[in-house]
Length: 136
Image (cartoon, rainbow, N blue to C red):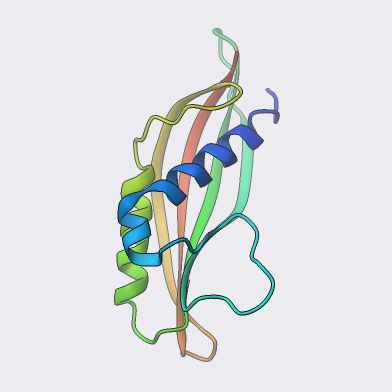
């Protein structure tokens, strides 16, 4: 197992979400790998934490990456957040991404958690995806 494919996977995921027309129609360019300083837009997408475990097999070195992408809004109600979360899910679920290192074997949506934030004034949806990668 190697963790070296993680950066390539993150770059490809960020590029796919940022370039997706469905995501862009809802959040514009507000897709972040790292949150910018200053005031954030009222609705945005942020790449979050990742957990990785070994999944080597007889064909080579591999790993399973579970990562979170969050949709965050300061708007009461879940509609806008759920539309953006759906677009993110559509952009990534079972998508074939090209990595700068290694190979993506599979990428699947696993689960979502939607909840209120900021004393119920805003909403957040954390989408969890699982990617299986091989390092060739």
